[in-house]
Image (cartoon, rainbow, N blue to C red; front, side):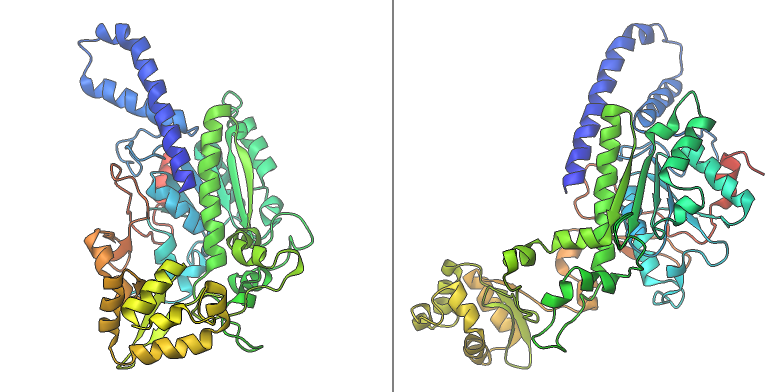
Length: 462
């Protein structure tokens, strides 16, 4: 992942600076033979954290939620006024890399996505479980002046990053916009100029300006605006279909995640923070690069092709004997010849003008689909899969969700961990691409306001 590789470089830069510091301080340390090793170790540990972080460290023995570690973002604190999916997903990934994430929620009800369903043991929402592990929950009524002051104090004292995905303009109305927080932090911490170092990330449907800035936005609506529905589903006016998961929210969350990582690296170079403005529309349009260029300069876009590829064939689902289905993909002429000769035993198909190349096969896909499925009908799905595998033709099972939970590849690679929650331990997938030398944080899914006491005590608030 681009952000991860950049961050790795930054961590290497950090280690290099530490080595130079150690070289400079070696003569002094040589004279400290009587100093307990634990004191020196603790000093170095806090030095590493302070290099990345601008927040005030809390050294009390009773607060060790984000103790120094070898995770890349250890020492970074993120205050997140977040809800639903996009920003919570971004901050969850940052938490797994070691950042301390303090999630601001409504007292009592919390993030309203907590109540979208209760699929996990009849109590816990599937969306919330996915996007909120490894965080602390601070319940504040920000319409209450006292609670608002607590939030502002928390930001001034602790925040390296402030993330929010409220409607455009709402944060500014509450005095929580980038300029207001930056000014307030500089006023409260004049010696540190912490406001100049603040990284402020916003996610919205359409961005902070432009004619759609204040237009309501939900995932399905963004899929429509970004053209996803025009290429997804089957042909005909009634054939459009949404993607089955929240891809607009997910895309925006991942771009917030990578941009925050980049901003942290940039701050190490310049000492300055920045404002990040991520829109769901722009995030999803970026993912629509192929169909956009396919329709370049007024050409028609890809046709809806169901579960098949719009322009490559055969690439999609095929029926087998016993009522089964297999997915297969042929990407080039070499693979097509292997499929036709070794699996289908129909070498004549490779010289038939209707199936000779990718474009002609796509144009005549209905006829070719009937031929392939007719041959596959003599075998069940497992037998077809075996034959495809032996020939080196890409293929896949059509799994349901239980098939994914039990996927042998994920189990073989030990990608599942147990995380704690209010309903007991549940399985969670380790984030893709984690450095093998760094253990991802897989912390508890918090209850509403679970960390109020510890955070208020940390801030010295009774």
